Amino acid sequence: MIRILFLMFIALPGSYGRYEPNWKSLDTRPLPQWYDEAKLGIFIHWGVFSVPSYSSEWFWSQWANNNEEVVSYMKENYPPNFTYQEFAKDFKAEFFNASEWAEIFQQSGARYIVLTSKHHEGYTLWPSKYSYSWNSVDIGPRRDIVGELAEAVRRRNITFGLYHSLFEWFHPIYLSDKASNWTKKEFVTNKIIPEMRELIQTYEPAVLWSDGDWEAPDSYWNSTEFLAWLYNDSPVKDSIVTNDRWGIDIPCKHGDFFSCQDRYNPGTLQLHKWENAMTIDKQSWGFRRNAKLSDYYSTLELISQLVSTVSCGGNLLMNVGPTKEGILAPIFQQRLKELGDWLVINGEAIYGSKPWSTQNDSLDSSVWYTASKDDNVVYAISLHWPSENILTLGSTQDIFRYTDTVIYLLGNEEDGVLNWSVEDNGAVAIEFPTKSITKSDGAYVLKIVVNGSISVGQI
Ligand SMILES: *[C@@H]1O[C@H](CO)[C@@H](O)[C@H](O)[C@H]1NC(C)=O
Ligand SMILES: *[C@@H]1O[C@H](CO)[C@@H](O)[C@H](O)[C@H]1NC(C)=O
Ligand SMILES: *[C@@H]1O[C@H](CO)[C@@H](O)[C@H](O)[C@H]1NC(C)=O
Ligand SMILES: *[C@@H]1O[C@H](CO)[C@@H](O)[C@H](O)[C@H]1NC(C)=O
Ligand SMILES: *[C@@H]1O[C@H](CO)[C@@H](O)[C@H](O)[C@H]1NC(C)=O
Ligand SMILES: *[C@@H]1O[C@H](CO)[C@@H](O)[C@H](O)[C@H]1NC(C)=O
Ligand SMILES: *[C@@H]1O[C@H](CO)[C@@H](O)[C@H](O)[C@H]1NC(C)=O
Ligand SMILES: *[C@@H]1O[C@H](CO)[C@@H](O)[C@H](O)[C@H]1NC(C)=O
Image 1: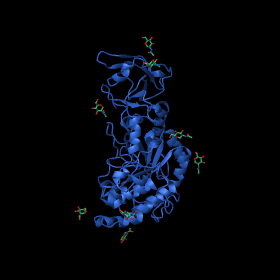
Image 2: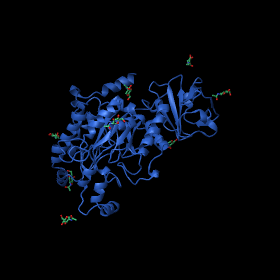
Image 3: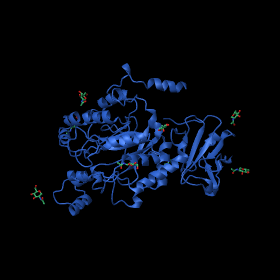
Image 4: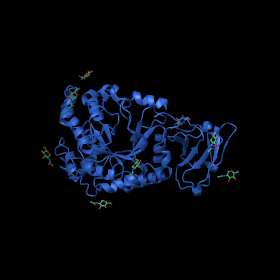
C-alpha cells in the first residue's frame, strides 16, 4: 500500500498540476484506469479504400507506386482516366446501421472500439471543416459516420475511440512541407491540429489512436503541444488514452500505451501498458472481397491472441473491415460472436485482471496466467484440453505451498473443486473433469484460489 501511494504521488503532473509540452512531463500522466481494465477493443478500418476492397487499405498508394496487382486490376476494370477520388461516390454505406454494429460489438465482449476517422487517404468519416469535399457528408454516404457510431456504441455502454492518421499520402500541402525537410509546417498548422481539435471537441472520444507519423519528427507534428492541450484543457482530459505514434523515434517510447508495430505481441511481460493491434483477416485492415477462408484467423487463434496479450499486460485491439455497403461480413460476425461466447464464461480471467509473476507455464507454454486484482486468485488459461484430463504445470509451486488452495474450472457444469497433487519434481498435476460437462470451448480457464498472497507482475 505504501508503495502504491508513493507511485501515485510521483505520477502527479509538475508545477501548477498542468502537463508541459515535453515528453518528460507528459510521461508522468497516470493511465486512465478504464483502459487497462477493458482488455479488448474492436478496431474498424473503413473509408474510400473499402470501395475497391482489393489488396488492402493502402490501395491508392500501391496504385500510385505501380504495385503490379493493383495497376492491372485498375487497367482491367476501370476506364483509363479513372481517379481514386471517383471511388468515393460509390462509398454509399446504404446498409450501415450503427446500432446493429454496436450490438455485434457488444456481443463480442469488446469494451471499446476504435474507428478510422481518417486514414492515410485523407477522407474523413465526419463532416470536417478541414476536409472540404473529401468527407462522408459531402461525398459518399452523405452521413456523419463518426457521429452515428459514437451515439450507438455509447448506448450499449461501449467506450468510443477514434483512429486518426497524421499524414496524408498525396495532400499537396503535406508534400510541400515534406519537400522543405519539415522546415515549413503549413499542413500541421492549418490542417492537422485544427482537425484533431475539431474531432476531439465534437465527438469526445476516449481513445485517440494516432498513426501515419513516421516520416516526420514529433516537433513537426507539434505532438507534445497537442498532447499537453489534450491532457490539460480538452473535454476528455481525464478519460482520453493515446498511443505512441507521434513522430520518428517516439513509438515504443512515449504515450499512454505503446502500440509499437502493427500486430505487436512480444510474448513477455512489458513494463509499460501496451496494445496488440491485429487483424482478423491476416493480410489486410480494410475489407478484401477476394479474401479466402484460410486468410481469417480461427476463433481459437483469436482467443489465443487475447490470452497471451492480456497475460503480458497488453490490450487486444482486433480489427474488422466493413464493406462499402456498411455490412460487417458474416465471417467477422461469427468470429466476434464466438469470442464473446467464450468471454461470457471466462471473462473473469480477462477483464480487470493483472499480469501474474509468470506469464506462460514452464512445462506447458500454451498455458498463460493472469491474476485477480485483489491478490488471491491466479487464472491458468490452457489453450488446449489436457490429454487424459490431467494438466501438469511447472510454474505454480509457490501457490500450492498453501495446502488449502482450491481450483475451479470455469464453465464446469458440476461446479466442483478439482483434485490436484504435487509431484516429486515439484510440478503440479490437476485433474480435469470429463470434457462433456464444460461449457467452454477451445480454451479452458482454471481459477486457482489461494488462501494467502500471490505475487502479481507490474502494470
Ligand atoms: C484521358 O485524359 C487525357 C489527358 O487529360 C485525354 O487526352 C484523353 O482523351 C482522356 N481519355 C479518356 C478515355 O477520357
Ligand atoms: C437499425 O437496426 C435496429 C436494430 O436491428 C432497428 O431497430 C432499426 O430500425 C434500424 N434502423 C434503420 C434506420 O434501419
Ligand atoms: C458498463 O461497462 C462497464 C465496464 O466497461 C461496467 O463496469 C458497468 O457496470 C457497465 N454499466 C452498465 C450500466 O451496464
Ligand atoms: C533535413 O533536416 C535534418 C534535421 O534538421 C538534417 O539532419 C538533414 O540533413 C536534412 N535533410 C536534407 C535533405 O536537407
Ligand atoms: C505548434 O507549436 C508551437 C510552439 O512549439 C506553437 O508556436 C504553434 O502555435 C503550434 N501550432 C499549432 C497549430 O498549435
Ligand atoms: C513461454 O515460455 C518460455 C519459457 O518457459 C519462453 O521461452 C517462451 O518464449 C514463452 N513465450 C511463448 C510465446 O511461448
Ligand atoms: C478427487 O479425488 C477423490 C479421491 O480420489 C475422488 O473420490 C473424487 O471423485 C475426486 N474429485 C474429482 C472432482 O475428481
Ligand atoms: C486460510 O489460512 C488460515 C491460516 O493459515 C486459516 O486459519 C484459515 O482457516 C484458512 N482459510 C480457508 C478458507 O481455508
